[in-house]
Image 1 (tube, rainbow, N blue to C red):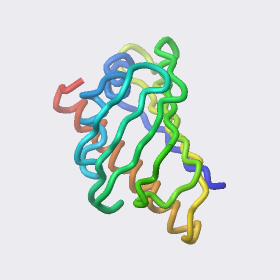
Image 2 (cartoon, rainbow, N blue to C red):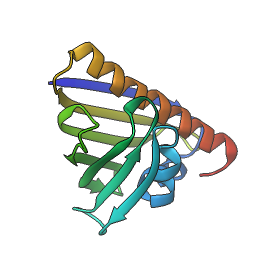
Image 3 (cartoon, rainbow, N blue to C red):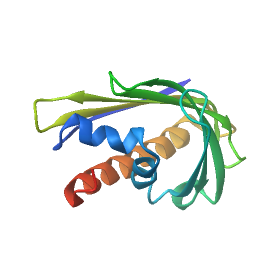
Length: 148
């Protein structure tokens, strides 16, 4: 099993950055560049999002289920339930947490675990790390633009 973790400081209050995770529009903004669209089915725990992929992942879709959500702790976890035959990861879980760092900043912690399918671990890790690079860049861009 591979674990990929990233933690970065974001120059915005935690509750503002949380909106990129806790709202449908925020999730769409944060996934730009490697996800072309997201559709949501249901609400709360068990909600399923279908993401149309693009870019370095390839064109296709992936479905993830919301398995953990704690607004008070500003944390959530999605698990892939359908790879769409485009994401080469088995049992992928993605966890995110926003940690306040004073009144005007926060720390974004992200962790994913998965088993690569028919590919070398280094290549699978590189795909996940590129997802994080794009996601983190989108978070910083959203903050700079005042989108959150």
